[in-house]
Every structure is written in C-alpha cells, then in structure tokens.
Image (cartoon, rainbow, N blue to C red; front, side):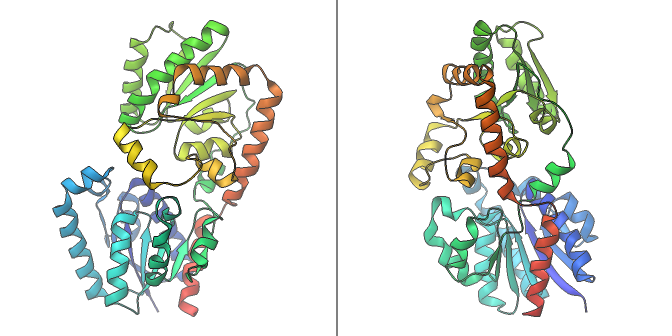
Length: 376
C-alpha cells in the first residue's frame, strides 16, 4: 500500500538533504507519494508533487522575515489547507524551524493521525532549550545531525535518533589522495557575498602581514560561486598584495581543504568540512554589531564553532568580531606554519572529533527510522 509523505524544506541545503532522503525513502518504502514544498532537486524526484519555492523562501535575518510576513502567512495557510485535505501519513520537515515548528503545532492539533518527523533538529539547544518540551509534544521522531542532540530530545520524551550528518556522504565522495602542500595557506571566506565582503579583505591583510615574516608563503582562496569570486577578485585588486601571491579558485573548496598546509575558515558548515579532512585552521566570524549583540543575549554556548561544540572543547581558535583582525590571524598562521608538530596534533584532534559525525549511508539510515514509524 502506497504511503503519503508531505515534505517541507525552505533552503538550498534542505533541498539537497530532502532530495537524498526522498530517494532513500523510495527504496525503503517502495511505494510512496510525495507532495509539499522544496527546491529543484526535490521537485524533480517528486514528479510534480513538490513545488519549488526556495528562491523565495530562503531569507536570512529577522528583519527580512518581518518585511515579508504577509507572504509567509499566505503560504503557511495554503500549506496547512493542503495538509488538511490530503491527510498524509507523514509530515516530513527538513530543517527550516521558523516555518516548520509552527506548522508542526497546527498539524499535531488538526491531524493527530499524521506522524510528524523533523530531519535536522532545530538548534534550540543553542538559543532556547525551554522549547524542547514543546517540540516533544508535537513531533513523533527527531532525526539529529549531532549525537549530543539525541539525549536532549529523548529526555523530553521525544523519540530521537542520530543517523549521522549528511555532509559525510558528500565529503567521502570528494575525498582524494593528496599530500598537504608546504607553506600554502587556504582562505575560506564563506558562501554569501555580504559575509565575504566582511571577511576577505581582513584575510588579505593577514596574508600581507604573514608575507612580511615569511615571503615564501602562498595563498589560495576558495570562492563558493562565480558571483562570490568576483567580490573576492575586487577585494584582491584593491589590496597591496603582489600579483600571483593569492590565487582564487571557484568550486574547489573541499579539494583545497585536503591540500593546503593550514587555513582560515569563516564560521559555518565549512568548519565541519575542514575538520573532516583534518585541515588545521582558525575560525573567523564577523557580523553587524546589532546582530552579534542580539545573538550573544540569546545563545548561551561557550563556542560558536560547530567542531568545538561537537568536541566539547576548543580545538580551533575562534576570532570573533573585533578579534577577527589581521594581527591575530597572521600571528596564528605564523605559529602553525612554523611548527609541524602542532599542525599534526591539531589535524589528528580534528579528525577524531569529526568522526562523531557518523559513517556514510546517512540518508538510508534516516529513511529506515521513518519507515519504522509505520510498524509502531
């Protein structure tokens, strides 16, 4: 008998994870009918049942959401109406907590027979742990990316599993056999143009400082897209660095993480990628000061780096806001470039921490956890 699954993802990463999970569910459940909201990858797999909305839905920041409150409310009401009419076996929520947690509450109230599954646990452990019992009341299964998240939701009475981080499958596919270069520094300023505009000029200043001490050092900078590469090229032209010292490469960040001596990485998923490949690095983070001060009031964690949170201790230094400056970064790079033992030690520690992300086959394990709901 065919199973019905309504899926909601609101960002590009969610579309990727959602599409791979849908494929795994097709193999596990054999007959499954998908509807919902997602991106182009999910839409392609669903055969027309999933609407591509990520270009409109993927907004960042409280102000941007408030500006488009009417649009989101209209879309929310339409999704809820579709769910009430279709009455799916499972509501599968992919990350996107602002929209999806509200939707879960409504579906739990009006469709008690529909099982509610969240893939990529909302990071309420970072900003509001009091919400965990509320989530436990509305959900049937929480699929976590990190093992430390499981007991937090389990203690609230919510069935929780950690199939692993979906990055693992992607990173394993892109693993290559290369030796780390000597005196080659990787610069990873992020994927968003605003983030790159804040961080890359500082990285270039760090490069200039380091060159004064070690003129033999060379730099390679990873651009996430052609658009980001243009922003980086403009900053490089405005710098005082000599030609040929910094090379910008597009779409090769994971290869570079496996081949440079050490690096500087913008806070985010890239820090997990770098750790998975054992690349010694320091973390840098800069946002607008009002945003930072607001986040500092909400988030009560000793670290912002995902690998430090996963390890439960500070493996990599975190240069945040005013500390993310050329002096601090160049000093760290100089120390680690000149000390093979420290680099090797940090590399092993990062590899050990990253091993907690799980083994390949993440989406298959997640699909089996969802299919188990039908037998309980």
